Image (cartoon, rainbow, N blue to C red):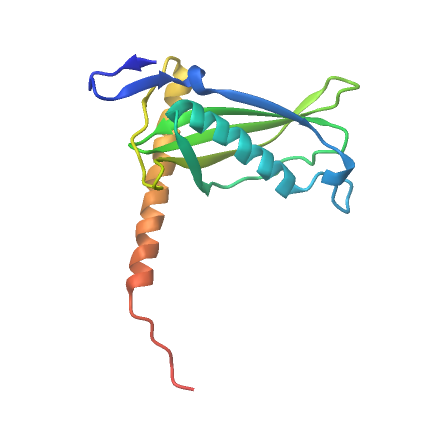
Length: 177
């Protein structure tokens, strides 16, 4: 952990908060097609991303959004699922965490990239109020690219949120029956 130019705000590298977890997919995780339930994978992704966010913030963090997630390939019962989480972007109190999911056939050793997604977390205090998080130190070109892409996703999310607020605030009219 380092101090940034703004000496009141700490900073951490991407590597300091990265988290990897694995889970063996069991019959209880199976859907009617013999694949693993998407919801089971999403729960694992959320937990893995939460560890990454908490490591970065060193505070309680809550999930505020999960961006688009596409299941590229099915995950099968008996496979070992690996989740690799990294902080991609940091705002004042929010963080985007990217999670890459891979499944491994443990008999052959073959690993497949099955999906990736982005989750936004906010660090909170004991009263549930947002608190500032350390800045993000990017050390590689890949981390810089991820930061820029995450910044663009954040801009779009904020635009969508603002558009929803405007729509919700507009008077709703109903035609008489």
